[in-house]
Image (cartoon, rainbow, N blue to C red):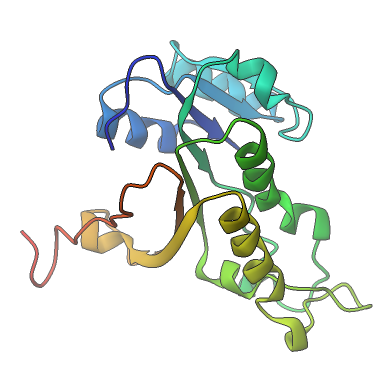
Length: 202
């Protein structure tokens, strides 16, 4: 995507800076804002991305309008905690508050309206739904909350599409598959990258 210098790039749930590095390689300039509640994560991100403004606080406590200072937001990247969607968690109860972190996208869409929102998670993210009394996902409502999440973004004027991509198809030495949701409100088409490695690639 083409990003003008006056537009902001925001990395929510910023970890050590891997996603920010990928964004920088893609658009040719550093991420403007990084947010994470963990001091160690922010310290590592600051080492890797010294030109980024860092906020070490809960993503829910950050005032999106205030930190953007009236500047338009070109891209907001979200990689919310995925372990409470994972099958590897087995029969353990899950934390509904952590499962609800993706709703941050809707808050930003309603306040500063990023042109593009990209959310990355595990494929099971599509099963996001209600929890039962035992604190585990209720299979009767599998995907219910996910569909509501998509409708909310659409009601804010976003076109929303999603896809599962396998890392090894893009040159990474792993067969891990990840879920990517892209929402954009600038009228431009959503385009997922074509595989660069493996059969049919380079």
